Length: 67
Image (cartoon, rainbow, N blue to C red; front, side, top):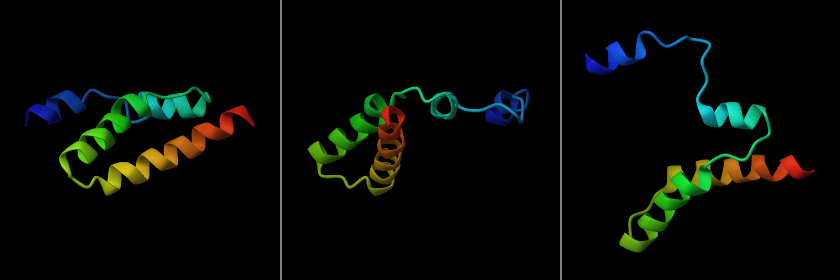
């Protein structure tokens, strides 16, 4: 119930900041967040395949910014 009250006033046209970054061809905080998850997973022997997939996709998209 709490989260419904948080989410209810948000605009359906709103976009997460990472999506806004991609549309503006700005580099995101993917290394800060996803990179940290990858490092912690490796350190503790915990696979993070979904995070790894998203990380690689975002890195690939951002690599095209300089082309």
